[in-house]
Image (cartoon, rainbow, N blue to C red):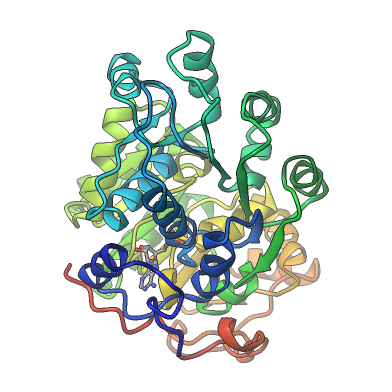
Length: 432
Ligand code: AMP
């Protein structure tokens, strides 16, 4: 099995990885690190949860260390663009963790908070800047950020960046960076718009593809529960009475619903919090760290707020309301089963959501097993769904602790490194 030192990483990085308990590189790290150390451009098709951050942060840190130049105030050497604040913070934390023995300065720029501390961080001459596009442009226009000396540019979650309408901002930002740079672009999906952006900004690039969403999805036990809208609250409480639901991310469509569900849970004695776009950045960060620390067992989120949430050990994703956009389903459930673990995704479907369920199944080219064994099973909705050609009933006796057959191993074994069982990072020892 390939080790981190086989990949040519230097000792200060290896030491940091050992301290993190990373036993071996993940498939994306095996593929990405050697060409990135050589300075190649890269197009990476990968989701978060694959070890993507370390795959780009480690070689970037090593290249910075090989050529130590003091970054001038406001002139970072590395720029990472991220679609969301949460992801930006997490990426910066990754650089900090992996680079802790190298002593590079970092800055993080995102909107929704005062710009003062970000301006000060830029004046201190950070080597690495992680930013969301909107606020970055703002600070560039005010001359607090100068991208002329950027040597490495990373676009993370490019598909989301485009989904969120950042394409123009991204193009303006990229146009301010000299051509003599290394450019990396990562995206979970590769729609036409992402491909055309890649062609415009990458040169002679290495293309790597790991763990397509379906492979992660294969490790998630998916179930749908037909339930009348008015019974959803009680069904959720019932599910949460099961102690095996150790850390649950619950999705609603609206901010209002997120608040309401969190409040109801708290009333029924479950430690819960809500995260959505109406909350201040500080409040969102606090909710997230409480959830990470286990102070809140349940986090209720809207799709936008959940983008970029990277919390290990989410045992269950519960779709209290199905997403309107079928693509969001895969992004939602991908929050569980991180880094090789297994997880469960339970979706509530009321009478008005049957069509959404069908759209999700079509999008995934997979039917979701119906769980009929809960106390609030709404047979009439199930019948309607069957008539419309949707999910098949499971007939499982116990509420189904097992994924549908063929789901877990069906398409495993992607050429060597990306294979199904025995993921190299499954044995990671974890402090918390
Ligand atoms: P990412 O895809 O960057 O969001 O990473 C997903 C999770 O995997 C993070 O919690 C990382 O700390 C963890 N991780 C990344 N690389 C490894 C590795 N080689 N071994 C174990 N865990 C890892």
